[in-house]
Length: 151
View 1 (cartoon, rainbow, N blue to C red):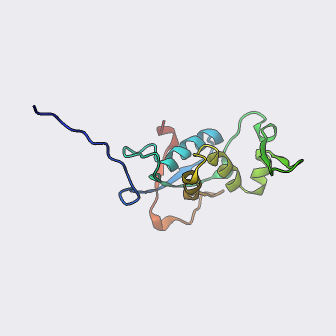
View 2: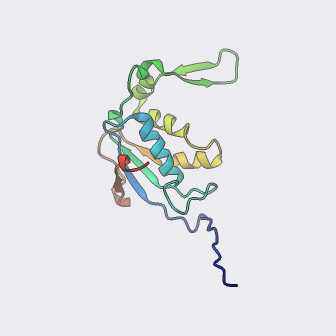
């Protein structure tokens, strides 16, 4: 009997091919950019995706200061943190995070979309956010991706 055998290939640290990707956030909605960038960081767009391995790309977000939130979300949405002590709950709005730096707002949004494990903590380090159109990673020869072409 002649049968074909298909083997599931699991990626590991040695076989993963990581790339550098540039994403332009100008005029894009913050949450939609965040969800697609989280998938890129995780490696979900690659055919050899493995859930327990860092097989995602290094993502550079440019024009982060031009990201859009619709409605009154700049002031109505509140991100809560709790220190564990009585009265230790603090709230921060996206407008306050943007005033401190665009990096903080994007990191907060994207970190919430990554796994809450050691792998998620490693993946967030592959994200680089810049307010303008210039970045300092030209030596890595990143390729530009249109987020609207991704699902």
